[in-house]
Image 1 (cartoon, rainbow, N blue to C red):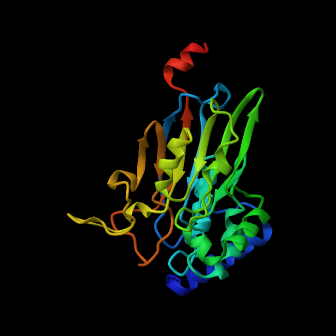
Image 2 (cartoon, rainbow, N blue to C red):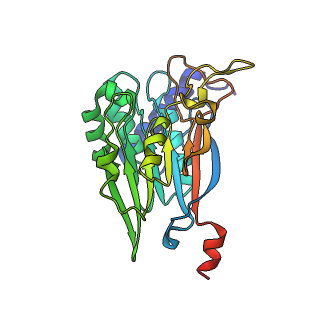
Image 3 (cartoon, helix red, strand yellow):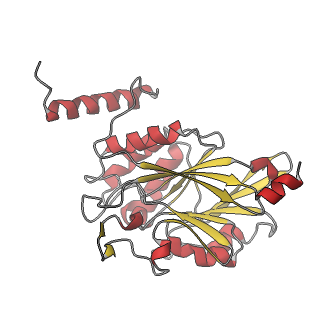
Length: 289
């Protein structure tokens, strides 16, 4: 039997995704992406001030979706499915949901609305979101019950324990307001900050934030021998382009993200979903026994 053409396979995937969107049910077969699946990066993050009630809290981090011609909705749906398979306690979204055109805003929001997490889905906006229309993206995400933190904070409460989830608007657009997001919070409480641009770690450290989740750099997106990262260079240096790092006692994880900009390829820099397990340091764990 002859194999179906590439066009027929593509249209079949489209019909499956439309059916999924209308039914709001998990597909019988996981949605297939057009590009390669994101790599799943798993890492333990040890926080001195983490309350015992939130030890082993699992955060799944998605960023830089960039739904556009370069990143079709099939790839977004696939990333959402893979994120849900990790069974997160909390999902963190750190901006750049679309590239340029506002016509992509509601489709990507509906796809991200299928994310499932026990404690909720939290989001901040990136520079491309401000370019495409920050108010519209905020409305679209909130319509999907995603909590958008715009220079604000939210308290996770379990018994007498509190863990603060905070978020700031984009630094490039000078929309960030760290005092509004953080100044009212008790100094001794643990704080997680969602900040699209990793440059925010400098102000995060000044405000006593324990852990920052960022994107923006795409991990470089295109990496060449000798030259290294073509895009996504950081003013803080190469160590703040991707992965884990710290500055003045504040830890950060910078994800390579899902999508693409400027050029429709990733080279030596695959897309990524980060699965981060918050942990208390071993000495503190033992002290509670």
